[in-house]
Length: 216
Image (cartoon, rainbow, N blue to C red; front, side, top):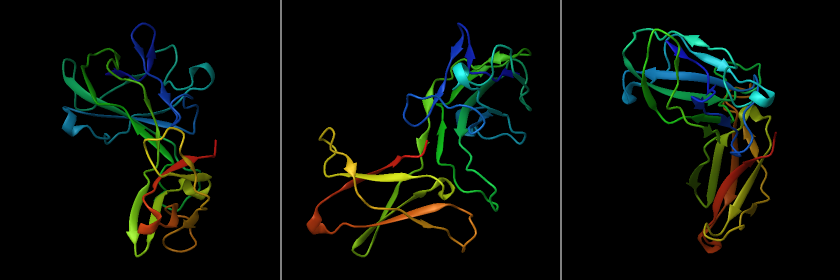
C-alpha cells in the first residue's frame, strides 16, 4: 500500500512544475498517474489506473493534502521492493473523436524504488520535475524543412523561434512563420497535429528551431 501524496511535512516535498520550471501545475487540467513494477524495466501503467488531479492555490503542484491517500498495489505485498514513476499530462480539451489528440504538455519523474508495507507508504525517493512541450520533429522534404509537433487539439497558440547559433546567449528570435494545422483523416478533429514548412536551403546556412507555447 502506498500514500499517493507528493508532500508530507518533513518526509516528502516533490511539486510538479509547468514547462517554464517556475509555475506549478494546478487543478483538474492536469492528471497524475502512478506507474509501477517489480523493477525499473517493468515500470508501466497498471491494469487498474492509480490517478489523481492536482490541488490548487497554495497546494498547486502537489497531489493530496493533509490526510493520507492510501492506494493498494495489486500483485504486491508488505515487504516487497517496488519501482515507481510518476507520469503527469495535460489532457486536451474535448469532446474528441477517439483516440484523443496528444497532450500539449507531459512529463515523467525519474524512476525510484521503495519497500512497501501494510500501512500507506510515503513515496520517498520521488523528486520534483517539470513538464515539457510536445516534441518538435524535423525532416527534410526536397528543398524544404518540415517541422511538426502535437498541437494540443489545435486550440493552442505557439511561436516558432529560431537562432543561427546555440552558443550566443539571447540569440533566439521569432521566425515569423505561422503554423498550418494539419488534421489527418479529414475535417474531424482526431489527432491535432500542426505542420510548419520552412525553406532552409544550403545557401541560407544552418538554423536551429524551438517551439514556444504562448497559450496560458
